[in-house]
Length: 154
Image (cartoon, rainbow, N blue to C red; front, side, top):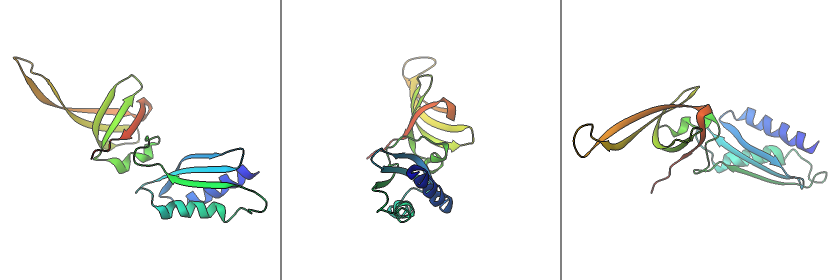
């Protein structure tokens, strides 16, 4: 009953704010509610407060003892949903594929099926000694991505 109420309130809040979407949701046996959200343009403190209030103000604390934590996915959190990639176009991602390939490349494009990446590498010259810089491109389907995260450089 409590879980269903929380799910319904969360769903209503996310329907009101179409720019926000759910990354993770859990309710512990001690009624500890944990919600992780992301947004098409990122997540501000006000967005977390909006979700928190939508739930907290609609559950009677005298009937249910609960704790509530609403947070953003964070800059270093893995990208788990296709919708998360759009706002990272132009940034460098670390992508691991299901066949074991590991790339650090710039996200150039996002489609319904996957992502397009570009990166430079130094490879041996076809003839003679030395190396040349090669521009690489690869399209990876979402189903072939085992993990992806934004590379933060300082």
